[in-house]
Amino acid sequence: MLALDEQVGPTAGAHGFEVTRPRFGSIDRRWVRRNAVGDVAVVEVAATAGPSEGDLRAFELWIAVTPEPALARLRQGQSESVVQALQHSASLGMYTAVLPPPGGEPTPGSGSWWKVPEADVAPEVAAGIAAELERTGWPTLTRLLDREALLAQVRSGDLGNRTTASPRVLAGAEAMLLADRGPSPRLDELIAMLDEGVDGRGRPYAGVATAFLRARAGERAPARARGARAWFRRRHKGARPAG
Image (cartoon, rainbow, N blue to C red; front, side):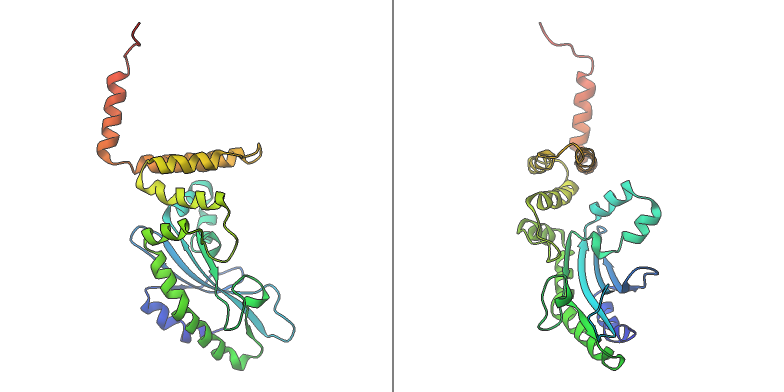
């Protein structure tokens, strides 16, 4: 769908996004922007698995934001090949939304498809995608590349229209963002929520996730606080309880 390069490419560049062309999967085009702290904003145009009868092709338009801590968590548990394949994928996003065509349904499914019934209308469809990105996509992604705005989005309970965010998902997302600020009572509260109610099969995974959050927070504790804790441990290492 070369019309995308002509219609979307220039505006994507103006908003700081660079095009990538995945070599596999259903992604037709992907534009990526990274902020100063490593958070990634993504626009994906993905071919659908099953276009309706009579359509030459059909696409879904996705936007997503993945904060750097989520990418670090991915790197911790996956091979380099998996990391390379997923690091710019909308499916990894903390915030993920599908943008439908005019009159479409703002939820994943056939109502959100951008349909190309014949090759001649491809430029028209591409122009519609470009207009929707200008109206909704670029402003949303630019806003959510600010950490404070992303945290506010999480706390509002809105992680996009891909799925309904459960309290547990929201707690995990908030904890992921707060861990980058260092230890805090709120982070401890969220980690406790994530540890609660986990069955036997899910406990190992939950334990790895919360261990990552604690380690991440510890790495980002202010240097003075880390030094004070180290001094305290050394000072009391050989102390014996009174009595």
